[in-house]
Image (cartoon, rainbow, N blue to C red):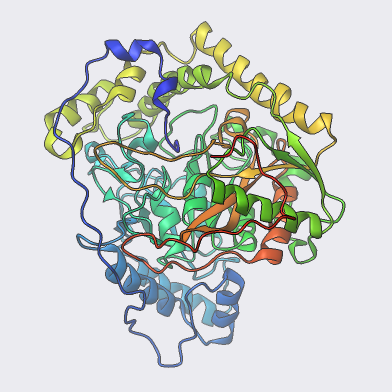
Length: 567
């Protein structure tokens, strides 16, 4: 569930690991796709594309729309835009019982038996989130790996249970960077052996970022109203930013991880991905909660457990909010820097107090510790997950490595397994060296990092560009994103991180990050809602074959300077 792993941060021990040398996988040439597939539905069907959850529920309540209509619409878009050699490859599997569940939800609505705020609404979930593998809705849960096909979970993940209890229809599973991007330093974001390469709907030759690539692309391209992603470091916020949607990585422990194939217990979380802040907030309300099966959620009690994230968003304001601008983490290509300056100007005009040139103490000092912890926790966590599958399933990390070697033509197309091997060679997470590394990184990123920066200037929130615009997908050279990454500090600290569309460069979306201390999701969502309402930057994708250059930018002399480090 990583955005990516910079090669420079790998321990020197990687050099001693055997590297695979299979030929590079060639990327499929992009092609143009229609954005208006035919949908078998009533002639009077309202315009579903980009409709919010509240709008959809209103239409369902008025009888202008049925849940069957909604499922039909999204399945038709998936068939038209996602499948085939030239498709987006965002959806890895369709729920075979989705239509039957839609008809059931319609019948329940007619009888006045509404289950909750998502009654009859389709939702996609990432393919590392367990869904029941038996019955009429039987689906795989594989983390994109061929090795787990046929070894299906016997229960839903806690998050899926919450969605079903709220009346949602699980439409299917989304593609991802295989094993949450903890497989190879040379793998391309959004690629898995099972699902292939997910494409960015704003320019089909561009990368969707990862690892929650399919969830982000599906929401952006209207393959689903909302989706669930997961993050260890950047895997919700980066795909959300480069695909022009809202993504929230919650505080670790806000949302249960039970039933989710892990990368690292110390940083993993699930979170909402949506086209608006309001939809993300409502989705968080429904999936957050204490779970006895996940000790990290033990902190959810009292007022914290009763928080309402979508309440009060309509009146959210930025008046008097003290916003710290993370300049050292804002070093970005010039036009991203210009968009960031425009965002700062909008925030200031809305009454926010801008505290400029805020430095995050100890930034860059804990990445080696993070990698050591992730390597150890990945093996322990994955093997615990595998132990709960059927007897024929792989049981050890070594089994997964061997299976990849056995089917190298499908599982190792130009990539190696250096991260899997690193984990296999790592000490257990209980080792004193790993525990010390975790404690050290947590302190530097959290108390001595984000908390210290906010306390020093009495800040309410920190902001920075989330990521660079989407880069070209290249299966030879790998990921080539530019600009500083802002995701690592909140990821290591376990703090919330929200991204909201901030505009575009050459038609490629970019996002604005809102970062706060632990348990500050409600605050971040209010600020994000106010910014979204001011700017309304999101534009639906046009599925162009490649990016189209903007006109040469002209800098407004009144726009604040961005950084003397900008490129």
